[in-house]
Length: 226
Image (cartoon, rainbow, N blue to C red; front, top):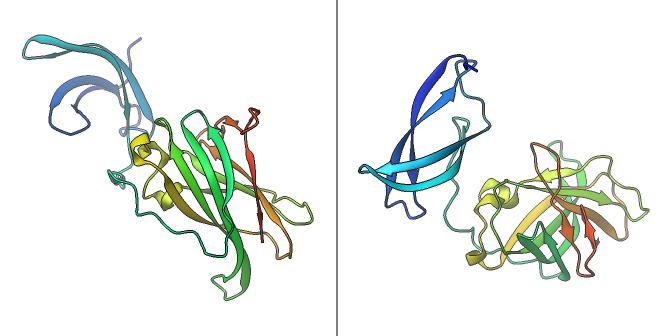
């Protein structure tokens, strides 16, 4: 059927090293005088350059907000784990694209904006990318206190504080170590744990995780931390 306010726009397709590009005309629908921040998928039956057929493929475009900053091409500098934080093996594979090799962490007291002392879980995550992701997954933490009381909601954090999202991770990166800080809902001595998952911020769906014993789940428990 006829789409309202149909406009023809140009886009540029560039290869990974940025040495070649093609200009393609696409018909996009503008219903509210501006494009929504969402994916736009369009099948391209053919791509020609110089009058010759060069490729035939599907292409996915995404309309980004005006404050979008292109991610860096290389991962951030490796951070060191705290000397008094024990490194524990994990070897949990998420979505068959990334492995959580190990983790470490400790509970610290930090001052909030009002100057009140609040407990915070400082955690280091050792990742090994084994594939590529097309979704900027969030790190999801649900802290569990020593008395087994769990937080009522998850804390969602972007890897590397938005500086290197999961969509940039690639096997050539080798091991990546990220440091995150998760607020805890109360102060209590003893062993803290966390239910950890990778979550799609748009849909709320989690990546399937396979634990070392071969079991499938939507999350993995990490800990203890104290």
